[in-house]
Length: 99
Image (cartoon, rainbow, N blue to C red; front, side, top):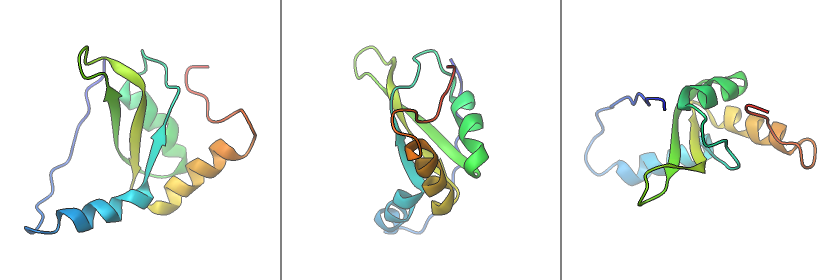
């Protein structure tokens, strides 16, 4: 399973909720992910829409195994919009990862 590198940024105290709100338009929720998918594979696949900042898979609370969903954060809201538009362009198709 893959490692996820995170960047730490210094933020002024009290700005956490504002930054979280700023991140929402840049973040997309992905479902139906293969359980054996590596975090880097997800980031690489979606990088065609724009720079990917991070990917956080949703893990089962007990087993700590991936649940097949995750949150992907782009550098810009435009990149997130492009990914959503591509996924919704053909009904029932979406964006394929590992077939």
